[in-house]
Image 1 (tube, rainbow, N blue to C red):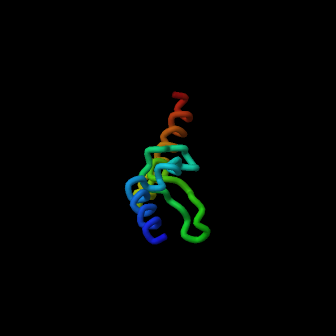
Image 2: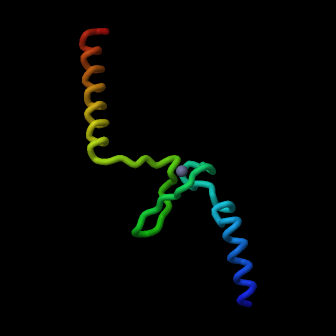
Image 3: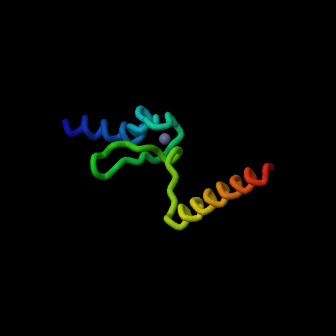
Amino acid sequence: MDKMNGLAYDAWKTSPPEEQECECPVCGSTTQEVIYRTRKDKKIIGCDDCIQQLDFYELYLEDEERKQAAEDMKLDESRGK
Ligand SMILES: [Zn+2]
């Protein structure tokens, strides 16, 4: 029995379970290396292919860029292009 478990473990090591279940349920990517899930209910929310990690400062900059772009568009409209 112990030997069996050892063999199973060796097989698991050479072919990790990810090979069977490597499709991201969010974006369908099969090339991802990491799956992200919530700590609270362990719900999978994506993988490193469809999830972007950024800090608040980057988020702030993107937000400012969006606001600026929206204002530029408004200006263009008021100028009648
Ligand atoms: Zn994904």
